Amino acid sequence: MTTTTIEPGQILCAIWGCDQTTATFFKVIARKGKWATVERIGTKNDWRGDMTGTAVPCDAKDELAINRRPAEELNPLRRKIRHGDDTCGYESIKIKPWGMYASLWDGKPVQVSCYA
Image (cartoon, rainbow, N blue to C red; front, side):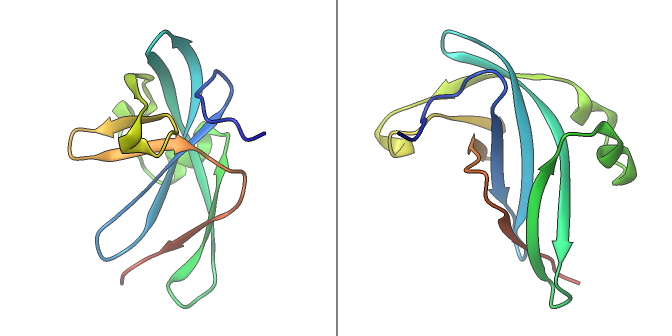
């Protein structure tokens, strides 16, 4: 059976972008009722050379430092868990006000792209 609920220890993935596709990963560190606390974890990209590739999570703060991420991205985020018809029955959380949503990562590499 596939898990559709967000629980501590799980990895969430947000796939987003404009003119490119970016994958951002988060680890669930706590859940209390309808709220989850997540922290940003690193992303390991495997580029093919044609501006496409795959991404997987990298549970290392060093990866964030290498990519020169802002310090605030290292702070845990507390977000309300969404569930219902608008999420196809799966739980998700809204990461950014402009609509970056993260849901359970299925364990497979995520297709990404870049724009030069």
